[in-house]
Length: 268
Image (cartoon, rainbow, N blue to C red; front, side, top):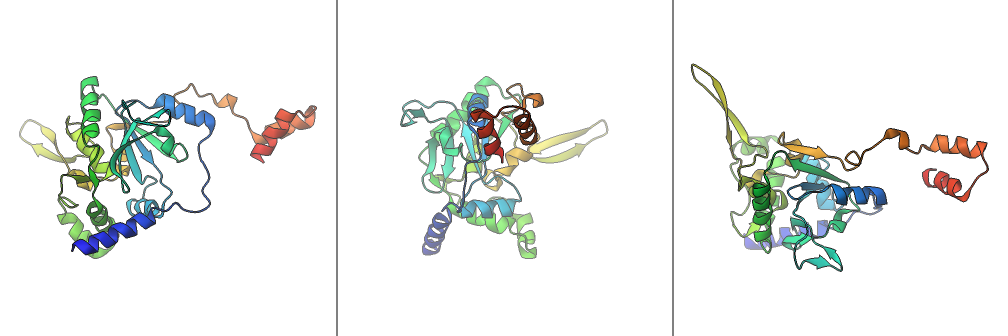
């Protein structure tokens, strides 16, 4: 079986090749807003551009194909002069730290755990940091593809699934890493809820889902994580928006200036 997984790993690595005709999505102001908004403990969801990212997005019916944990500057970890502030698990390197600039060209979303104490936040970040150097669990990705693929046989198998992946504690995927970090302090992501009733009350009881079952979208869907939009966290005022049709009207009514001409050309 080992040779088969080696071949699948090589196939997945080839599928990591970025899709063609890719253009940056984030403006300079949005980049600054993202940097200023992120706080330790935040989960950064990423819309990847590789072919395998497209497959993950299709199978999960979600925009998000990757997730990383923002922990703040990590001592002695830099790319050039930029500090590493993210911890993630990726196919090429396993669990590593990374600079924020790695994902500034991608569409992202910030998911923030609500009410997480400072001490627990430090523990969550520390848990992820201690796993730097672990390998990537390719079998977990393969199992997720089988688990999520929309066909009748998989549906029956899916209901019996308790855990996915190799079972090797030294291998992990991105969403499992972050789920485990929050489980370490009993912070819920998407727990399984059951109801217990007695003569006096009806109670909700949460059970932890196995971390190998998590995908990036689960942090977006979780009722315990708040979506934080950088543009709105910086005193957004819709009156300050520059609209193309109004710029053209103003240009027609005034003497054109290089600034106006450049603005019109940029939105044309």
